[in-house]
Image (cartoon, rainbow, N blue to C red; front, side, top):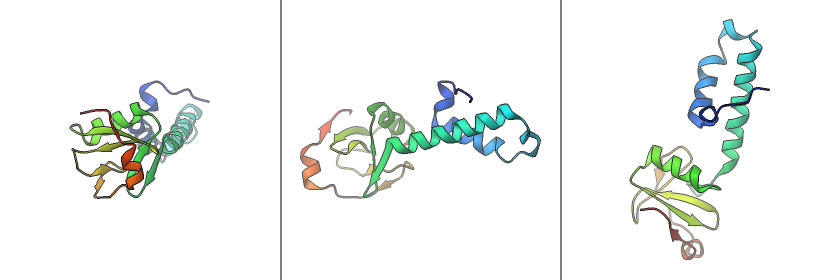
Length: 121
């Protein structure tokens, strides 16, 4: 089994590996590349398990993952902690990001709102 590098474990790199190598006929018999593709698919599955979406809002188990998502899709946003995990708000009193980095105007449950803790401005 191939061990992915630090940068090879990112969503972007895993998606690139699969997109650019999975369907290439000249690489079908290359066991190293096939192992790399398989490791990338498994890493994407792990990453998907770290992010849950509820009512159009992505909740991350790990703050670092939430910050990376924010940096990519809403650099001026902020990370907020809820019972479900860490969510990214694009601006104060603004919409939240979903898994794909898009926003939907959603209302959070009042009970969840009480647990809100601003962690990043």
